[in-house]
Length: 182
Ligand SMILES: CC(C)(COP(=O)(O)OP(=O)(O)OC[C@H]1O[C@@H](n2cnc3c(N)ncnc32)[C@H](O)[C@@H]1OP(=O)(O)O)[C@@H](O)C(=O)NCCC(=O)NCCS
Image (cartoon, rainbow, N blue to C red):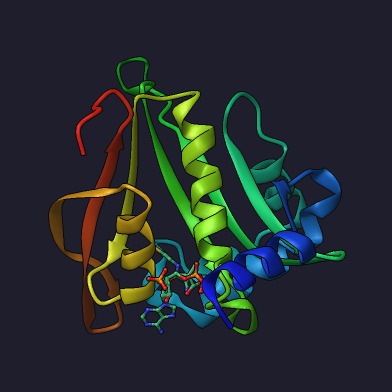
């Protein structure tokens, strides 16, 4: 299958839109699946989020202002997501962060990750000057996706995540929407 066929396949069968309150159960299920299945990819953990109520998860998607979670849907099924949040402090409101990027294993490798990340970038470019992200140094598919779509590495946080006795380093990335040179 060629790249162009994969893209048209995704665009015909997949809708990407911001999550809304009625999506809360699907969002909770996907978020917990992501935390359980890819623990090293996220700062939060399954153990911390699993006990939270549906109302807590509702608060994530009843977002005010530019904060949003974009979901990819195949029919009614939520297959992937990517979040965007603006920093709250007055002196940091020109910056946002991409968080919670996840595509279900059976949907990977078809361009969905790129579509979701690009959606966050397009949205962020209308609301902030700097978009930040962090990615595991050994997470090749996510790193490749972020680099390809314009994120520039600016540092490495050693031992950013700890799971039991194992530490994971993260690459810190950003897009400066005011910087025009490549
Ligand atoms: C990262 C993730 C979202 C990518 O989703 P996806 O739908 O497979 O992404 P795409 O199909 O758009 O592919 C993105 C790139 O990764 C590459 N890729 C896919 N699987 C890969 C693998 N196992 N190893 C290396 N590269 C891989 C693809 O080839 C593509 O690169 P290309 O454009 O040069 O061909 C998905 O793998 C995922 O959910 N992983 C677990 C959670 C995670 O790591 N989230 C990121 C947290 S920072």
